Image 1 (cartoon, rainbow, N blue to C red):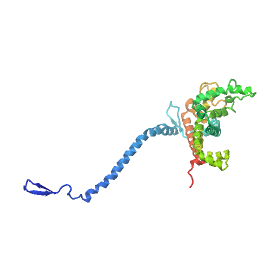
Image 2: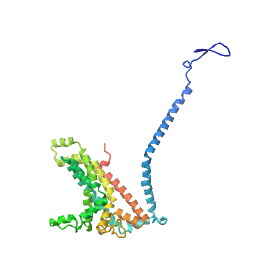
Image 3: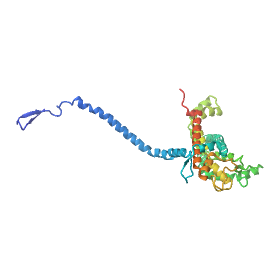
Image 4: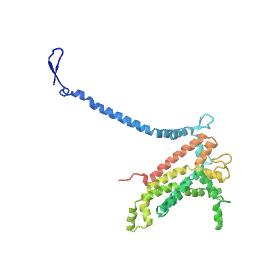
Length: 348
């Protein structure tokens, strides 16, 4: 308490100090808990805003380069459209022609599935073997790893042109070397029976992308497991079967899934090989090119899609082909991931 003189009375009057003031009532304190949830909500809103700001470029790219083209392709697949006139709605006419009347769809689908069934496993097996050899190298490891990875850095068009030159049946060095040993080499890219195997050989040559992934996974396998297996009497084959393959199974599954997706969209190598081997400068079905040369052995689904869309300006029909390819790729991807055990959750 403090004593002060009031003007009215001129006497001392006791007033309570700040410390001696009575505590606030319960009603005045009840507003404090209500402010905390508001502050929490505002903090959460700010965090969400920051997260959306960080994700904005990726979300914009997803919408612009995936969602919009997908929706537009689905819309144009039900129309007749050549970019010169307004789209004309034709219903399921494009899909009916695709599944029942297009004479080039059969060879294109067969060739594409051939690359899926043959090219993908061959690349995986060869990449795994080379990675296994490189993981056991004791000297000049950097040189050998660089040597096997370098072909993957060569652009696909340059790789195809170089291989068509190397495998030229008349003047190519491969057939000339075979003649030294008394062997008549095949026509390679000019023979329907050898054109696809020639691309498989080229695919093995540029396997550095998956080889380096396999090499990293093999180097990550614990050495203690091999030592324990050796003490138990396991030989090399048993160690590979029971230690190496189960350990790197997720990497093999990843290579299989990505390889299947790439093989379903196989275009550049087949289109360039057809154009160069036929002696034409145009690629993808121009007026001077022979689509799928030799014959239709290198005609893939995506090459036919490119032909209809950008050479014949049948964008409605090309959109229908693109939608079917998207659906087939999604179905194959789901089935492949279900079949591969590394993509399934472990059972307790």
